[in-house]
Amino acid sequence: ARLHEVQVPTLVIWGEKDRLLHVAMADVFHKGIKGSRKVLYPDLGHLPFLEDPARTAADYNRFLEEASAP
Image (cartoon, rainbow, N blue to C red; front, side):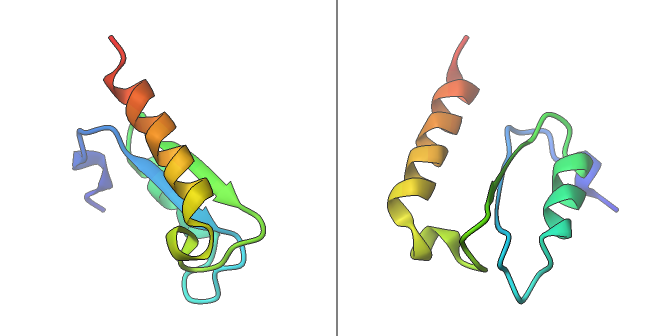
């Protein structure tokens, strides 16, 4: 209910094989946070940053570069 209050660049990262929190929650966060970016990993689960740290770090670094660009 308070997602609309988030006023900072936000990257929503989600594994489509997450068995703890359904992948549909990624859309809830993405739609609720204005201007957010969503990245889904079809082959990963609940902890993408542990399951594929290189890929998630690359996506995060790209997001940071885009968020800080003038």
